[in-house]
Each structure stands twice: as C-alpha cells, then as structure tokens.
Length: 312
Ligand SMILES: C[S@@+](CC[C@H](N)C(=O)[O-])C[C@H]1O[C@@H](n2cnc3c(N)ncnc32)[C@H](O)[C@@H]1O
Image 1 (tube, protein in one colour):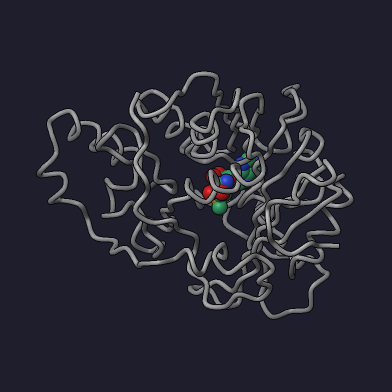
Image 2 (cartoon, rainbow, N blue to C red):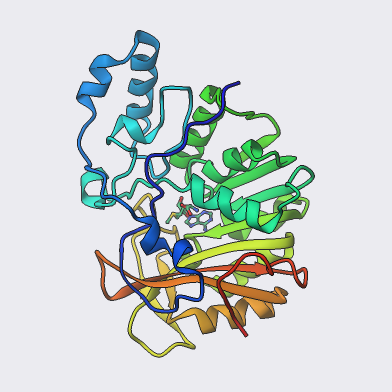
C-alpha cells in the first residue's frame, strides 16, 4: 500500500469575507485557498493514462457527478476525472455539485485534536456522500468508520471507492443508505468522532436531527453548515428546497442558522460542553449566505489544542 499523495488544493467554498476569525490566520479557510484550479476537462490527462487507469476513470465518470475528490490509486483520483486538480467550485460546471478537496483540512484537525494518534477511535459520518471522511479516518489509523447518506447515488460512489482504493485500508468501513431520522432504528453503537457537515441546513427539524447524531457521539463533532449572511445571529430561518437535487435534503423544508451563536446554543443543549468556531464566512457565489464550521466536544479540555474562537 503506497502513501496517499498530497492533494493539489485544499478547497472549501470560496469566501469573500471572514467574519469571526478566531482561528489563527494560517488556519482560516480563506488563507488555505491558495490557488484557483481551472475546471477544465482532463482529456489530455486521460489520453496519457494507462489502459487500467482509463477504464477506472471511465467508471468514475459514469458514477458522476462527484462532490469529493478521493484518491483511489497512485495515479487516479475521483475528482481528476473531471478537473485538473480535482476541484470544481463552480457548481454549474458540475451538474450543480461543487467538487472539493477536503482531506488535508480534516487530517490536520485530527492531528491537532489527537496528537497521540487516533488508533482506537471510531467515526460516524452523517450524510457521508462519497464517504471521503470514512476513508481518510481509516487512513489516519482509526479503528473503524460508519457512513450513511439518504441517497443511493452517493452510497454507490462510496462503495465504488471502497472497492478500488488501494492507497490506504478500506476494511472496517461500512456504508448504508439511510435517512438521518431513521438512524436510531438501526441500533448503531456510539462513535468517538462524528461528522455533521452539510446536513443541518437540509433538515426539516434540524435540532432533532443534530440531537440524534449528538446522542451517538462520545467525544467530538465536526459541524459545518450553510447560514444566512448579514442578519442578526440567534435565529433559525425557514426556507424550502428541492427534494431532487443530489446535494439537498429529501424533505423539502430547510432551516438556515443566522450565525454561530444560535448553533453554539443548540450544540450546547445537545451535550457539547466545549465549542470552537473555526470560521464564519460569506459565500462568494451566494453572498446572501454564509458558512460556519464549529468543532464541538463532550470532553472538557479536548479542544484546547484546536485553535479557533471559544463559543460560550
Ligand atoms: C451538502 S452535501 C454534504 C456532504 C458531506 N457531508 C460533506 O460535508 O461534504 C449534503 C449531503 O446530505 C445528504 N442528505 C440530505 N438529507 C439527508 C438526510 N435526511 N439523511 C442523510 N443524508 C442526507 C445528501 O444526500 C448529500 O450527500
């Protein structure tokens, strides 16, 4: 098994403004966006690919659109099948889906949180999409990972990656198609670390949804959501959304938080004694919206090394 390559770009949605830069400048998402990667088709890369790589790339294309750039083999990444650098921020160029490099940021935060390693830890990834965090968790040495998503499209991708990723272990990872609200029926064991990214604002009852995930979390939650931008913090704002869009929810009703404070209050109520704001930023392509990332812990002191702004 070879070492996964360093990604060409650590990507989050572009942000034009950082509102609460509690994190040190080096860790704010804006400063990580070092270069804009052209979303050009990779025809020339495909032309140079070996026959096995060409077949793999073709299968990847058939399974598209993809949201997560995940390395499969020494030379094949899911995102590279669509764009040089494996990232497309312009959703219109990828069937309404942004294609992102998320691995480096996640692994960096894990190292900060658990400097002695994550060997005995388990991961729960809510709305896992193509399963990237589960694969990177195992790559980091975690004991096991479980990911679920309401859409078969994404779980098919996750299982495809599991079958073809040779650069790190893919055993002890399980994926299921499941609606978050049906998760309690599955009788899952609690996990040490939970991903709750990109799902809060796709739920008709986000507090109940978050509580379901929180009750299955022993230590830490990585929480990330879209928010409205420019309105007073402290509220949830109702909206409607497509049930069909691959990146949306399936219930038609959504709630945007108006800022990190209301989210911190909800996370606190869910049992997370410490909460750190990693960023709260305006979205470049939809300036009426923002994006908030919070890392929350049930274990006092666990976030001391993580940086960010302490949320009360
Ligand atoms: C914006 S994407 C976020 C994907 C991934 N978590 C990430 O951070 O990149 C939203 C994901 O949530 C999934 N999803 C939406 N509603 C869900 C629900 N009720 N239960 C489980 N997954 C859901 C969608 O299918 C989609 O994969």
